[in-house]
Image (cartoon, rainbow, N blue to C red; front, side, top):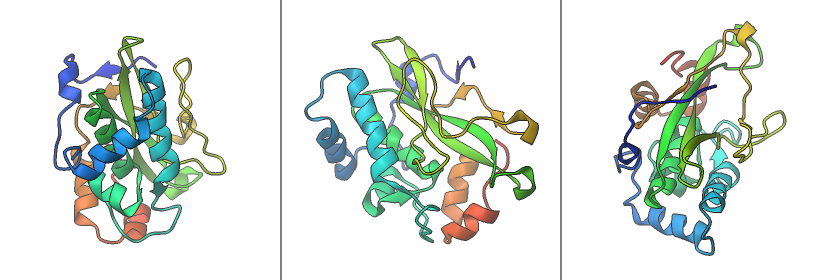
Length: 202
């Protein structure tokens, strides 16, 4: 799929915000701890991706009722759903001056369409060494979900099943989608939110 940038200016994929709060000391220190011995850009991005994927749990997988939203909250509590984990991955990368954006898919909540649909978040990262964007999904691997870092082929968490009315959106957004952030802001029980409160379309 051909990716489409919301903005043609890489600087638009670098700002700090209330949810991509990489000025927080915890974000700054973690980014540098992860990458302190690395100099190669791709190795740095891979290390950040694998940290968020493997060291930060998906809230549903651990059945946590706590809702995290900002990057610093996700890092502090050690978990988040995809909307929150994508904030953390973007914050860590942006703190290292690596442009990072937000991408979305429309997926079934469960394995089949009768479970309903929801919007799933992942990131796109600009690699200056390749002069192009790649998408990375740090949702967290588990049985049936195996996302990997790759510059040659996408290895995302979820393949799109068109016959289930799933969709892969091509736009790389500079900011997280407002519906996804509002969902995290207005809910206080992650398990109920995850089953019944996620947006179904962008």
